[in-house]
Image 1 (cartoon, rainbow, N blue to C red):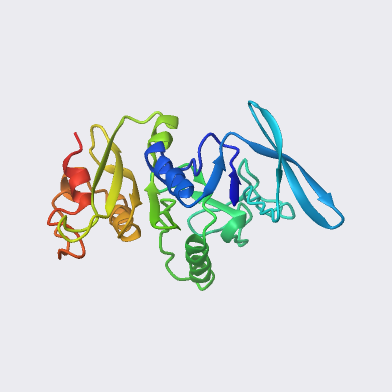
Image 2 (image 1 turned 60 degrees about the horizontal axis):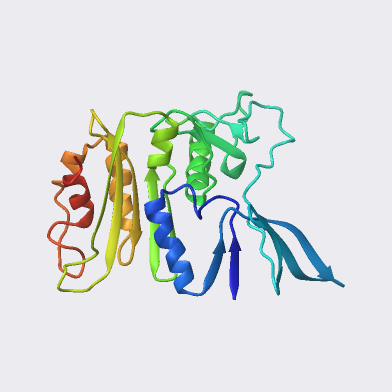
Length: 271
C-alpha cells in the first residue's frame, strides 16, 4: 500500500478544489491512501533501515510501518553563495534579460525567480520548460542580440493514473489572494464526441469581471487535457476574452472533440 502525507489541507493546493478533489478520488480509486493536514514528525529505524514513520495531525499522532520513504517536501533555491537581490524564498531576482541586480551576472533555472506576465509579481516557477527558455535568453543577451520576452504563466501539467490535470495562469485562489475583480466558471463535458466515448473533462476558467479577459484555467479529466490547457495559455498571452475564445475555429473530428470543444463550452457559458 502507498500512503501520501500532505501538510496542506488538500493535495496539490496550487489548483482549486474542483480539480484537486478529482485527483484525490483518483488516488483512492487506485488504493493510494491520502492524509491531508498531516506531517511526518519522526522516522524510526532499525539498523540502517527506516521501519516506521510517526504521522501527526490535528487529531493526534500515530506510527505507520514503512518499507520506503520518499521525501518530496519542496524545493529550496541554492543561491546563498551569491550576493545579489533575492526574493523572500531566497531565489535570485532576474529581469527580462535574466540579469541579476549585479550587471552582466545572469541566473537561470530553479535558483531564480521571474515576473508573472499576468500579475507582474515575482513568481517562482522551477520547471524545465522555464529553465530552457531562460538559458536561451541569456545566450541571446550575451551575444548582443534582441532578447525575446518570456511571458511567464506558471503553466504545468501532470498525469495521475488514468487522469491528467493542467493549470495555466491564475487559479481562483490566486485571484482571491490578489483581491482581483474576477469571475469563475466551472463545467464538465465530453472529452470527445458524446457517441464516440464516455471520457469526461472538467474546465475551470478565471476571467476579469469587467474586461472578460481570461486570467487562468484548470483542466482535469481523461482524454486530451494538456493540449486543451495550452489553448488557454495562448489565449492569456494574447489577451483574449471568454467571448473571443468561445468562437475559435478549432479543428474538429469526433475522436478528437465534440463540435463545440469542452473548452469553448466553458468560455461560452461564462456569465
